[in-house]
Image (cartoon, helix red, strand yellow):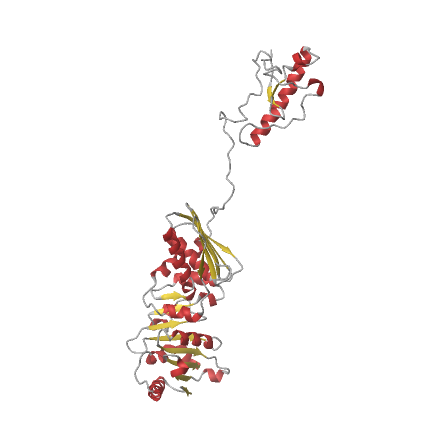
Length: 428
């Protein structure tokens, strides 16, 4: 049943409600709360539809406050109140009153709403769009126990979160916070399954979505770890990655409906994380009328404390330090010259890995003069020094394979293996 009232008062609206209830055969009032929706004409239909769907779970009297802008200066000086009363099938399981305020009465909406509130019933005020910066300080917000806003509908959602933190009062909440309830439940359940310590967290989602910041602030506040906020193409939240000392824990939702939970050492599981509509969100908020301390703690953590300057852990190949001096396999400690040796040789390694001696070239080669041996030793020293320098710059495991230097001995002074001779006896 629907009743239209033009240029009316709050008293006439109450009488119309009583008459409508008697006409449909339900004179008793069975509502549990009063829901006040403050919106504009453009968003009134969607907000009213969501409230009607939520009334099946929470029968309530819904008051829709629409502040109309008068066209001419003369109309702005005239105050008028128009109302539309809906009872029965047109209002779901409760009652709906659409209030359109013109002129100066639009600045005093609380005086119109106050006589229409259900006696001895809690009051919830919801701003689908254009919420005040201080909901508790708003005249309509002062009438309510719970004040519901939606930072996702604002032009600058991240800045809006900072303003909400500065003006927070017990009873304030946000539908952007309500959207991440399944995510918070799933992440808490995942951490209950393993014994680990979280080291860092990454939250991935679309850019202008305050739910991503709220989830990141909640994780940083509860886990006391650095949290990185990264961007994706959406929709909404797409992934949460927790780096722990026992392996990564990843909750990934790429399509907006079905997510995958991955825990180290366990098989991957599919999780239903669909994006909920406004009716489900407002129904969840109407289930509790006490202050949400968890939301307050996460909100006051601060957006500016996300994305720490410290490097974020990424899986990569293990880094191997060069072998220190004196350690086995250290190339830097291999002898590159021994002036006190009886042969006057300089030890080096050939490209095949066999030790060579520049001093033995004089006894093994056809030209065995002292000058030839000295020049061969000098060339061997240069090659050994270049090989050692290259080996120190490029750490390897085990004995180093030094490349042949440009100053290597010529073919006439080609070094031969020293140590054991061809017949297995020690070379003299």
